[in-house]
Length: 286
Image 1 (spheres, one colour):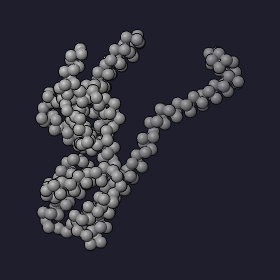
Image 2 (tube, one colour):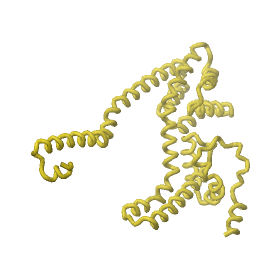
Image 3 (cartoon, helix red, strand yellow):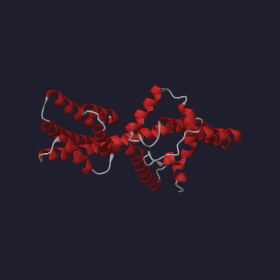
Image 4 (cartoon, rainbow, N blue to C red):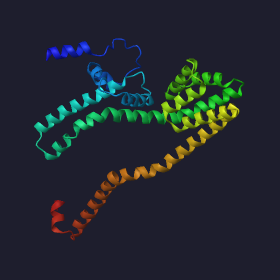
């Protein structure tokens, strides 16, 4: 066993230089030593297309510089192993069939938990982008109306934005432009990386303006108005959906308690009036 551990440590992926990483989530930091110990071996079994798929997913979550695709897959197996150990312990110490039946799914839940966590992070990040993007459009239009060109206006707008996913993504876009990509390629890369409808519409409008020779300022102003209208419509839609979403918790939690209170009062009055059945009188201690 000791020789096996020494071999693992010897052949582990060299990861002493961690300066390239962004701050890592707690989920990853806790198991980082184990992840880096086995990630090298997991990577050798991953195909190129599957690695690219996981890399794209990590990039959509804004974690390109947080962890590598093989580290995410390794985390799946670590969680599945821990959940399996927990399932064996529960199975050995509890005789309830229901509990044992539930524990059989623990390893599967553990295996998919990192993906569930990552998908939730992607969903929250896209929601933040949808909220922050209209603010960027307003600042960009104001900068261009003051006489600045598109490139300078966008650079100043991104610099003025509060910290968040919109600032991160457009900072990457500006870095790609400085690295030599043309605007169309950088915009397309931005849309694919984020996969948010408002960003995709923005990119499509700018690319169409480049092709048709239209005025970018007019396109951006129209996009800013469009984004604000969409943001208002989305808020109105969510407000209209709130009563429907509240209906299920009301039915499940509030109404049963209300019916119990009303039923108790009616039963107590029936006992006082002498019209209650014997079983109800004995139940209320009459």
